Image 1: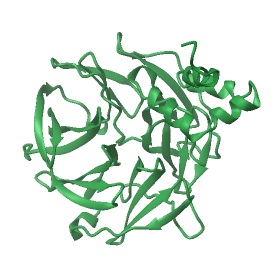
Image 2 (image 1 turned 45 degrees about the horizontal axis):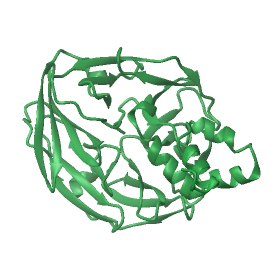
Image 3 (image 1 turned 180 degrees about the vertical axis):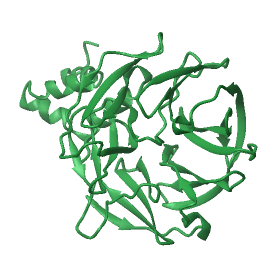
Length: 352
């Protein structure tokens, strides 16, 4: 250790600090400010921050916003801290659409504007432009947040407007939108199909596309972020005699899906994607009735085999499952109520 250069030791220590402490450390001196602002530092710090112990729950209630740690040993939230929105908004106005590495992609409902926001550092970036890019319409559009091979954070925006599909990519590096081609089945453009938010896993964004009635069509759309090519793969072979929903989650860079079926009682299976095929991992016992208004607001899965479910009212409750524990189930990006998100605290900036 004595042979290591001092700046190397300092770098290693600082990359292990909590995100808020890194922000305070920038004021120590000019050299530290320059070091902590480099993309190399931000990337390494982020990689060391994306752990289950650093996960927080962000809850939005009308005009207020709070952040709480997750206490896994008693299945509850820790003490909350208030977060002030750094942008102008109205009552019950902010919808969370997607999140990745501490960044949230949100929509302001009264203006339809998209924003990138880091609630830990409070930095944000408006993505809307005068030529009508960066505006989101609920129940018609889909959003996915991802990082490409050049470490550029990007937003994929799928628009459905009067039977016409438009697909656009925002780049944080160049701060602009551009159109990319996407040819898909015409029926997927119908409002009868619900597109989930994108789940980023292994260099690919995945979307579930589900028809909104019993026995409807369900597929998964893949977007390979480096080649910018799309592909359709099948849904897991689940029964279609009830409502069907698939919630995607990234587990150690392997895609998993909670596929739920039923009406008054839900049956839920956990599947993993191997190539283009789904392999069943486990089946959950039937879950007691849950109000349809709260159905499948799934946000988190933890290591002790307990399944946390966040409702639109912000309540956290648990479904116990007898299964082999995973080290970390990372949070899901799909929130039907748009009232909360499970995220990690990082210093990743929404702009360059």
